[in-house]
Amino acid sequence: MGEFLQTMQVSGLNGGPSIEVRALVDTGATYTVLPGSMLRELGVTPDSTMDFELGDRRMNSYNVGEARVTIRGYSRATNVVFGPDDCLPLLGAVTLEQMALLVDPVGQQLVTRRVLRM
Image (cartoon, one colour):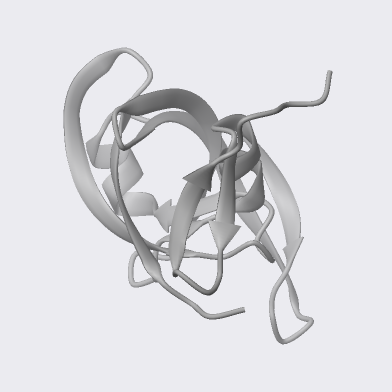
């Protein structure tokens, strides 16, 4: 699959400031990953710690919380991982599924899924 960036707005669940982020669309990532300092700046707080397998097969523990992500005017609360402060933001599969978005690898864009399975 070709890689591409998607612009999105990220904020805390209770409103407040938001930040525009360009994130790599990564269907291989389960959750959306953002720099931890950015999330804390927005007032997002971790509610759990989870173990993740990294691309090189190493295991690492990261804090997880919830933030509001907005893409093309559609907004959802979603799980976010508090990544290292220098990490590349990733837009993961859970957020894409919650927003009913599919990846068009040829057009390098996100498209709305019209039919959802119950």
